[in-house]
Amino acid sequence: MIPCQRHLFDIPEHVAYFDCAKMAPLLLAAAEAGERGLNRKRHPWNIRAEHFFDESERVRALYARLIGAAPDDVAIVPSVSYGMATVMRNVRVAPGQTVVTLADDFPSGIYAARALARDAEARVVTVPQPEDGGDWSAALLDAIDGDTALVVSPHTHWVHGTVIDVEAVARRCRSVGATLVLDTTQSTGALPLDLAAVDPDYRISASYKWLLGPYSLGFLYVAPRHQQGRPLEEGWITRRGARDFRTLAGYSEELEPSARRFDMGERSNFALLPVAGAALEQLIDWGVADIAETLGAMTGRIEAALAAHGIHARPGRAPHFLSVRFPGGLPEGIEARLAAADVHVSLRGDTMRITPHLYNHDADVDRLLEQLVSAAERG
Image (tube, rainbow, N blue to C red; front, side, top):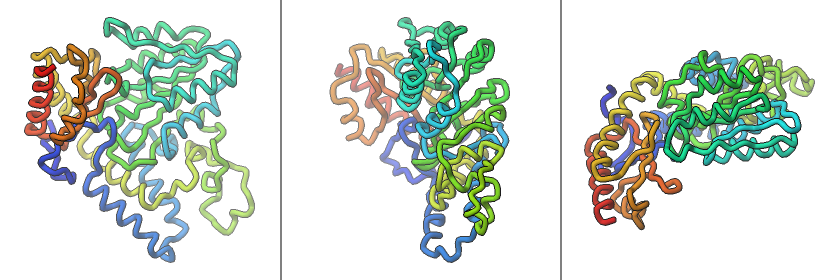
């Protein structure tokens, strides 16, 4: 169990922040690294050619270490939607085949899947959550058959917190020859995933949630078997020989023979990359398995206390994720009342999403429970 790490963040004692699934606060060290990086632009005469490569390679290697990949397998992207667009450019779907998605999944993957299906004259199959709150993974597996060309799935559902058995899904995809794209934005950094065992074709993670990183930066894992694909952009920095600025006007057609070919333009962001790097170093130091265990104990305490008042969690949830329903529906004005008390959560559909991190302590939990129990009693 990891002790409370609030001292590493700038969170006032009167703030109880349970909304990491929306946006994580920056670590103090990460914010300071970003300030130093931004200030480099004040003196651009000190920025040399190698600086367009060294920080991105350091951060790429850190992310690869976190997920159990090689640096060659990681592309730096600005968003999940960018990563999804890159993937869809490299997936083959024939007319009449199916693209399988989950109901109420985050829009970035849904829009990309629908656009690809529309262009390919394929069908989108949306797998609803079982009405009894049962095994969503089983329902997803049932939807994957010989007609399936592509499956787009989260590891942890962004609304319900449900964990998908992505290892089983990957096996089913391989058995029918379907491509598997995982959006692990709501799990990477907080929930272990055995990359070698799952072996997805692609895996995308935004940085600003459980990776504790900056907005407008993310990572695309590309399995080695797909690293000869076509990038979304025609950038200069993804070409062989790009480190020699004197030869750029030679317009090399030879792309990097790795996932680097899928990097976004202007990946060498002197402000954002140091933020991401400092956050990744801290996550690696804590250990994702220990983070999951610690947050699981916290959400378990919250879940048990709320259940005693008829406020129940969704089944099959991830340890870092608590999505609850009130017996009579969400109390009117509950979000505003919580915010007025400086207790911060998210409402998604008819559920309340409670997502803590290591900066939360027992006093935060007590204040959250006090507010929610009071709201349930008022009805």
